[in-house]
Length: 553
Image 1: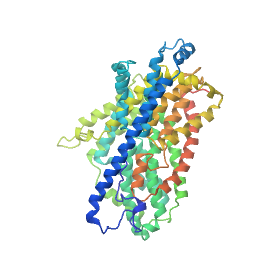
Image 2: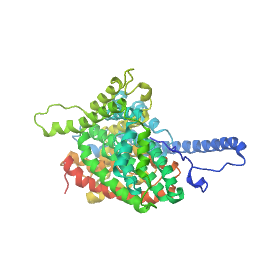
Image 3: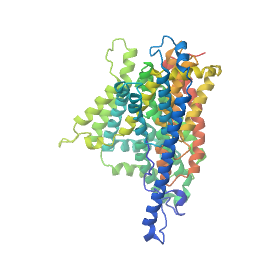
């Protein structure tokens, strides 16, 4: 999932813009007529350089995979067959373990370096495992149709239906107006609106929608305060607020961010443990709320707005709402389907668990696909226009769904081959570490890695590894659910990347606005990363333990 282009009205890099009130304004070059040819040559040089880097990374990844295959201990299978004689997947074969380890290293290296498109790397299991005779094609391909993939597919279609008619924009503006229009209140209002949207709509789409609203507000406020130079800190805080809350809010639901969904799918496919939509919200939503408040405090402290009041602030937001016109039937229809879907996701599993007479159990993925199908059926006007059509469905990020499948196929083979058990055996020395310290360390390591790599790829790579470590250090000896002590921080930390423009698409979009410098993002993001590590650790022990029945001590 990458969208590195800027959004809004100021797409230039602030470091190359002139010193004007408009961060996006640049001076015309005297050699403007020669610019196209020069730009083409420069773009060609950059493309050649990138191709060389990609081929080099691809070669390194292949070499690493070959080295792992030949250097993998020959007694690896004997070790785990002796330690786990009754395992359902046993007895284990050394060649299968070696191939799986080599493929895992190959995919991990390709995901981390971006030598191939992420989705292309995700298709490697469909080729490698059947061709190398360690698994049948049918056994591998089933991972690409896991229920969680359909949960996300339905969620994508639901979100696109809402986006098509602009309901998300109206809700966001109303939230901002409700919170208040003083500078600090505006920052908080944008964070609440963005965070709520990102629970249901992809982080990137949320940032793309919210950033132009923020840019238009800044353009209007600049007129009221005497130019952009008088609101630089406020502008930086607002742009970063949108980027950061797009990631923070997504922690609240399973469909908010791919690592959450990958975690649920991994737990289901590899350990037979189902994580319900409502149950996850009992963990993720409090984390998202607390994190949003703390992030707001950091932003308005580090980038304290220059003014206490914005003259005519409410009128600015009201004008944005008025420009949208009256709420349409299409918006109402899409909103009703969304609300019914969210209520079903949250209530059905809880009713089935806590209400004796409630006998209806419908999978979260089935609810999502029901909502998606309804989007194509329900009309929004007399002409018969539906909430969704197939033309808009082309905007579904199919590459993300393939990436899910590849991650789950790899995770499944890591478990089935016995590689996860071998990793666990190698990690047994870690059982001397206090569990709190281990969770803290995992959150920190994954968080640092995800600053440089895709959050989905990071989660797909490390979830099965952490599962193996959890088994190896004895966490699951008395309670299989305890594997979540290491899996949850891995998934949560994979989404928390705040320091670099390349870390997440929302970060890149905010940077591309022209109002944020790389140093600003580093300054604010560092503190958010530190807070994230502590909050994730507290969430695991304070919320996940009682919600999922984890045991320790």
